Length: 336
Image (cartoon, rainbow, N blue to C red; front, side):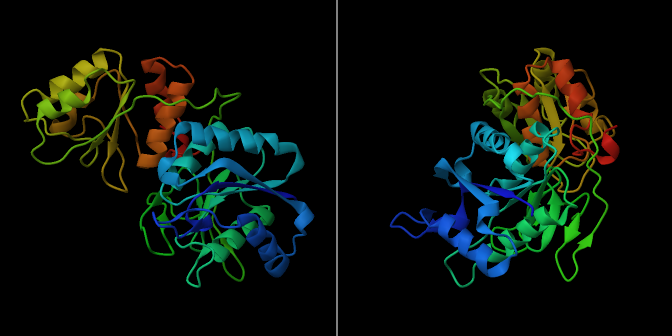
């Protein structure tokens, strides 16, 4: 019999109405064990549950929150065969990507899931998502860190939230799902190859502003956003890595930031894209040491990977080298 450990972090699935809106407070433990008795072949003694303290709305998640989940997973590593993490949907894609980098040597499947509606409502998708995640855990086919939602299983570092209300609220723009639930489930090839990371240091919080370019933005605004100097910067650029290069001083600001030793990571605003620095004249200034492209990574995978690499104490050149190399399958074809 497969043993499953569940880590409950908070989120909509276990929330209740209050005068201040939805807050954690439902009897998640009782609901989960009743669900297992009614809708699975698992015995309750084969399922353990940790409720993290404090339970949070995932909008309040931080890198330290990711580390709390990682610590709980490792604490139960030897007593379970598969793991399910119940998480709020707002930042679940960030957490899934963060876990994928830190758990390359975990050798157990980890499936994240949650719901768009609380478990106590008649319209809730909680039961479908939790039973789907458990079925994925029991399948023997899930690998690494994945996310189950709306009848689809996705690689954890390839997924993004696409809707705040639809039951199929997540997608993997560049790769598609690795499985779709049904009778029977349909599985695609799970390409999660990467170089891995042995004995990673814990996640820490760093000052990493995210700058989204929009038509008409001025260089003075960027200058204010990077003063004082941050630990790193993520630029959400146009297309394959273009910025408003005709804006006086914009290209120079970015170049000076990189020259000062601050890692600059360039990602695209397009959900499906491949960053190619210098491909267009508007992005030529970005093709220089200290500035690294995110290739075809999602924004969530890019941001959390940068946090992971900073937490390892790497130099700017090593950060850029690893951004271009796959740790856990977050890049196409294992990195370029």
